[in-house]
Image (cartoon, rainbow, N blue to C red):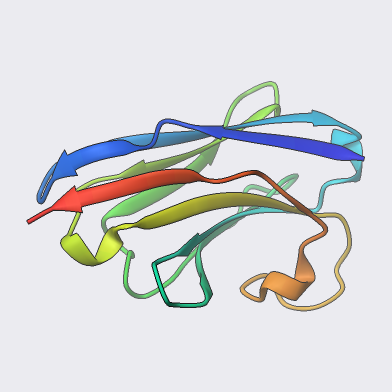
Length: 125
């Protein structure tokens, strides 16, 4: 089992920044990829960013490329999402997720085995 707890959400004005954190515990050695997804009201859950847990390769959705940065803590028990130049359309509940195999593709929700409870990000225009 892997446990994930997100924090760092809140209300911010357009153009501002937030840093989300995801505390990772349990069988962390089994993690292959950590991802961030988001879900806006009335929409499906969409891929935001992912990081290979061992090699550190990073991936981004086109909508956030150049504005968001994913990283991991040195102890590999935290994953961060630095969000800069936030836009109104970034408003959503943000979830971190853990993928423990190479099954599926990293930008699909079905590829992930564990999910956090989510943290709300609201960007005011």
